[in-house]
Image (cartoon, rainbow, N blue to C red):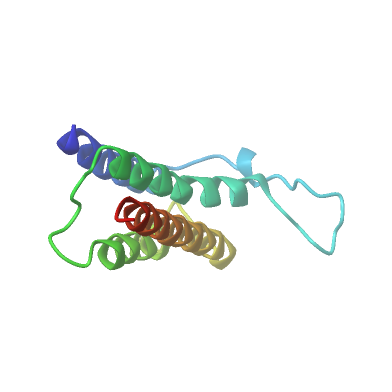
Length: 135
């Protein structure tokens, strides 16, 4: 099962790369707010949620006791997710039919930071659980 969860991680990363390279319509760019000062578009939620999926993969990996890396697992997984959240948007600079949007990158990074938060909370919960078992 460990290899399935690891493959899920890489599969999701590849899906995100492909989605960021294919030409998409402007349907997701519609505003969700009626206020003209503060614009919140549907694709901002998509950017946030696509990165948040890495948190679910992390949790599934914790449940299945996946060993992601030999050492510094939390740091390395967090860095991979944060790098992916930046690079996925930067990738659009290389493709003429896509456009780079710094706000999209911001929502990717917000999703990445939330993933890191989930990782740190899950790590702390495991430490508390193991400490309770020793009493």
